[in-house]
Image 1 (cartoon, one colour):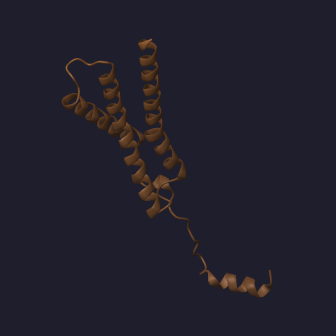
Image 2 (cartoon, helix red, strand yellow):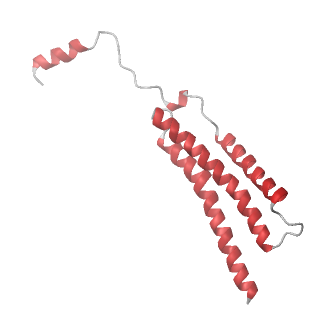
Length: 134
């Protein structure tokens, strides 16, 4: 590095002032994982109650039981997607607010996993219908 560029770079910063990095996400008030579980669970119970009060027959059979499970898990999936969208919107505003790990965790745990459970329950239900029919 030439001496002239070193002098210019030394002059560009005022003495005694150190540039600070943006505040880490740990200093921001975090939304707890427990709050996410609770809110998704409450939404799930509301979806289940909606099914019970509107669509559920008096005698719950195989098909209506699957529909009840679908409504319960759908509430959790909807809650997870809403939390993910909230995190993504905050991250677009300021990337320092939401780390990548939290964004991925939010999507996987609160949206993909309940959907995977829903798929597994559906497959088991279809297999049980096929085995029971024969």
